[in-house]
Image (cartoon, rainbow, N blue to C red; front, top):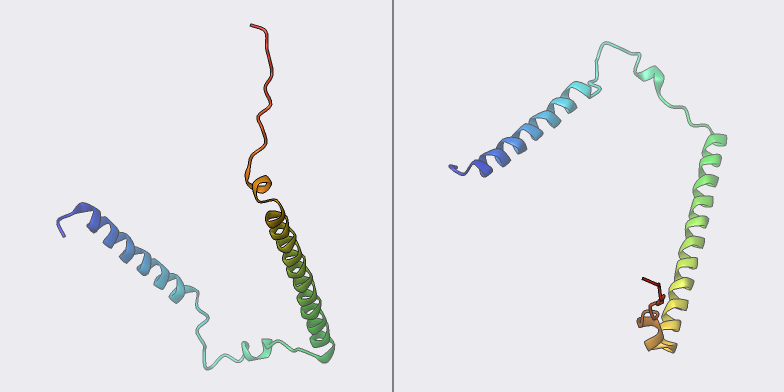
Length: 102
């Protein structure tokens, strides 16, 4: 590897990998076997909260379906317009010319 560009790329890749692994090792929540405080902070999901979550997901799915239906409609309109007038859809408008005194 006598090419300096290849050396720089190799060192930067190696340095990035080392940096990411270091972040993962330092920030990872390692389990401690003698400490029971982590088990007491488990998330409790009751029926009311689960129903609200299901309703939210259903309403988001409905809105996404409405958006996709609108996009399909718009695409169909544009395709029909392009088929009805193939030259009008492609040709740009004529430039506006102004006569200015010099």
